[in-house]
Each structure stands twice: as C-alpha cells, then as structure tokens.
Figure 1 (cartoon, rainbow, N blue to C red):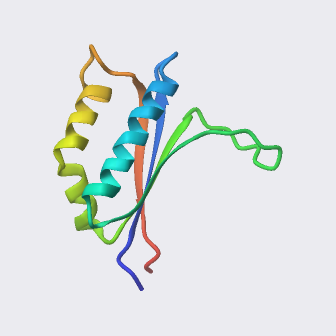
Figure 2: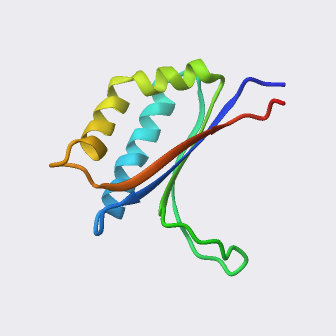
Figure 3: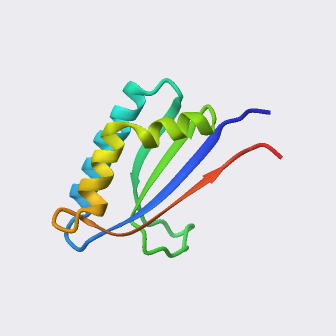
Length: 110
C-alpha cells in the first residue's frame, strides 16, 4: 500500500478564456513538478471528443496530479505560486477567468 494521493481538479473557464487558463495551468504544473519533491506527476489537460467516450461535463480543463502523501499536497496548496495563481485566476473578481471549479482527492488504499 502507498500513501499516494491522486488529485483531480476540474475547471470551467469564463467564456473566451479556455486557452489562457489552460496555458496558465500548464505553467503551474511545470513549476509544481520542478519545485516540489512530493509531487510525482502533474498534468494540465483539455477535454477532447471521442465516440467511445460519450460522457458530458461542463468542465473543459482537468488537472491531474499525484503526490507521495497528503502532506505533500498540503505543501503544494501552501506554496506562494499556487496561492498567487489561485488569487489571480479565481478569487480576484477583476482578474478571474474561472467560472466554476471543483477539486477531489483519491487514494488507492483501503
């Protein structure tokens, strides 16, 4: 058994901001991998269509991350670059480009 934590966060950009949000998240995920020893993987992905995947979701960007444990994820959330990104892209009404989002954590452990 591992203590690994898998993070799935889903993002709905404001209209006309999908590419800008995705590019910002690509940079954030690269910085996360570079600076955080507890981060095993971090990806910023965009929704694509496929006939064998008919599921619907309003979210068009998904961040997929894996950390060695919950503490490593807490370190990620407390980092200045994550807090700055969250403030600029989500919380600040003047600069926000996110309409909606959600974040969930998963584990392989029983």
